[in-house]
Amino acid sequence: MNYSTIQKDFADKHDVIDWMINNQLGRRNATSEKKSYLRGVMYENQKEKVGANQHTRGVATVATPPQKTAQKIADEQSVSERDLIRIIHMS
Image (tube, rainbow, N blue to C red; front, side, top):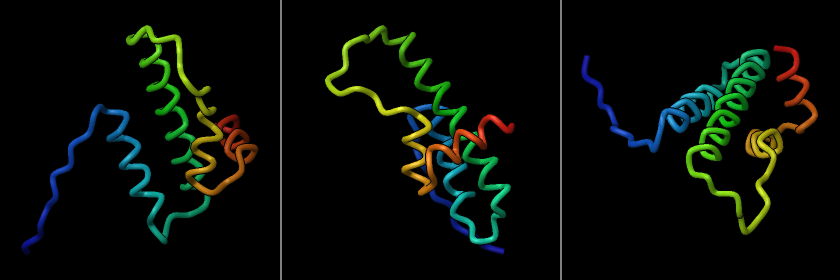
């Protein structure tokens, strides 16, 4: 059986995890429970990435205030921030 692959480049492991989660969220047969779980994992992954960047770069000044991680993911996934936070606290 022949198949083709596509090589992708990522900046760090957090970007890889986000790509894998977005790929799974795009599946039509993913249950709402599975999607909720994956959004929670994405939230934790992005919070870890933001925290690591703040401590390693030492950059304190930003031209625009950063968007809250929960709001960013909620906007990207077309869910409410409230629902996303509820999901996170359930796990």
